[in-house]
Length: 99
Image (cartoon, rainbow, N blue to C red):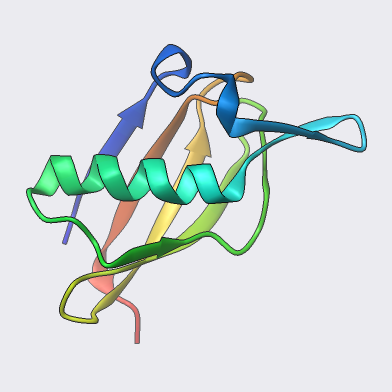
């Protein structure tokens, strides 16, 4: 599975941002849902789930890792990279499944 998802801040909106300890982060639940929805649209099949265990700072260049579980149970790593300071991000699914 190889898919790249590009989202821009206006399309996501400020709802993804949370302010904690003075540092804006991306809301994990919203990030998981938006990533699952958009990857489903990109490849024509909705993933069973997307889980992002860590918060990602809402700062251009910040990165984080998520796990996508396909309907058949196969799990793939997903790299999230923030493209701006307002919630825009790219998501890149690993070519090979996790072991």
